[in-house]
Amino acid sequence: MIINASRRTAALHTGGREHIRIRCLARRGMLHSECEAVDRVSLGPHAHYDLVGRAGTEAAWYVLRGPLTARWAGDPPTTEVLGERALLLARSAQDVTLRAGPDGAELLCLTVTPPAVTRHLPPRTPDTTKDRT
Image 1 (cartoon, rainbow, N blue to C red):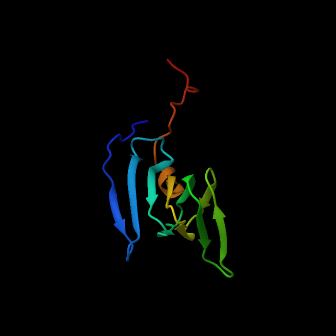
Image 2: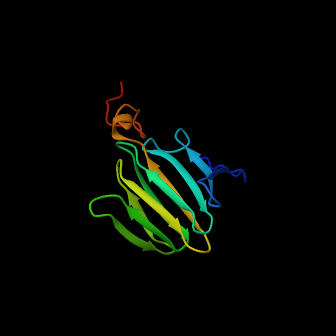
Image 3: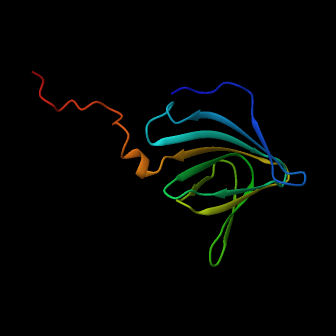
């Protein structure tokens, strides 16, 4: 796997003083076929980050530094406080809002490519079951 060792980040401002930094560690083509991206996300103190899932795409968020609050949209909405080493799974097209605590938060995010895409990609390993002549 190829990892981006650059210190450059893409800064996102979500209004007010909230500050979110995202550093891409790897993108599809650098990873196994099923992985779309690996990102490190830094949330400033009390920052809100809305995770609006795409249809068929799932993500796993691992908390490196926290705590933070996750709120799932729904009827009724669900809220959970996540500490360090917590794992959050954001299912396909699921809306989740993260809110960092007073000291901010750091997360790793692994996004999985939708099955509609991966079924058209070549297999990761060669087929060794075929007869050789």
